[in-house]
Image (tube, rainbow, N blue to C red; front, top):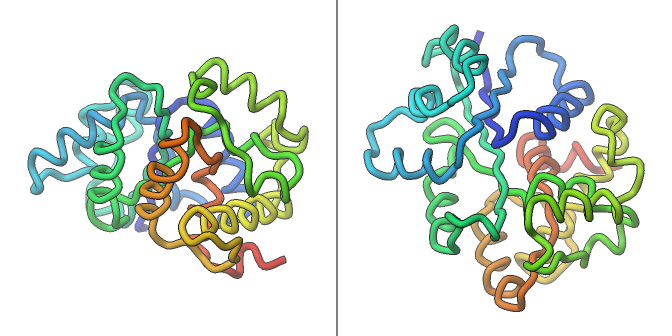
Length: 240
């Protein structure tokens, strides 16, 4: 059976949200492998960018510091992995972050059947719960000074709606609403219109975040998971 590998930056919240996605949308048991990378994406990028012939699956396995994940990966053969999707945070306050690295990573990780396809949360995974009123969310931003890990984690919980705080309670209908809102917002970031057309390329999102938001000391809040669902399934997943 061909499997799809989903790689997350963190150990807890990302896996909880994706387990919710699996429950709502994925029916093929055993075909989706969830792995917490527990390492900096910049390390993964550094290795793969230095040698185009390196296999991303092998590098992910080598760099993963968590024994449990290493054991999970060791049971898989490379020919069993058909697609790789990566989910990481922009986290502009990270000491390793730079605008140039963000763009280069999205250029490298742009195909799920090659190096993997990267989806970025702006400013971090907690963007998924930093939403209450969907119309207001379309223009919701976070000041760069508020994008430090502990502060944004607390702040996003305080100003986000209760429906999105517990991953296990986000059902299919709530996910569809999240996808619709994030797709409209992504299209606004890219083209200036709140369009429902699918966003298939993460690079213009990043470039416009840098040009129109970071240059003004803020980040347009956007979650990677709804954008992934729109990319994976197309418009049918959020036309409700």
